Length: 148
Image 1 (cartoon, rainbow, N blue to C red):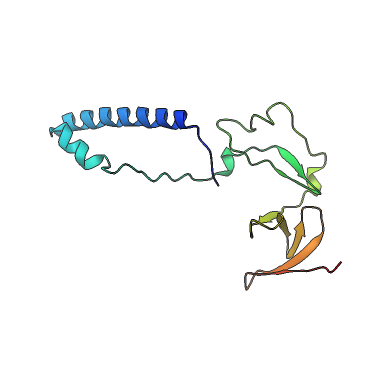
Image 2 (cartoon, helix red, strand yellow):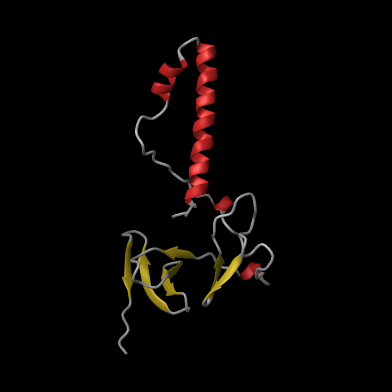
């Protein structure tokens, strides 16, 4: 999943993080009674690029329901300290009968293909049409081709 962060916001975040890390290294050097510059050389990365890994968590996604053709799914937009994204904060659909809800899973295939959903062993397009089957043992998908 990809999150776009405005350049100004990211640069500000990096500047604050760098300043706070230098302050912490200086405090640590004082406690360890070692030169701060030497400790900083060993602790801080010397390259210009740093790899940032974002862990996806279900707690940080919008819990609002959206209609995707025949299926009702979660919005899944990222949120911070909230249950709903800014789009669904004040206006969202509610499910009337959640007892009849069936758990579905989206299948990621090729970008050129329409979204597909897995219910049991059956694969459906978002319009509710059965388009294939999956064999969980062999991890193979069989897509039906219809002639028109």
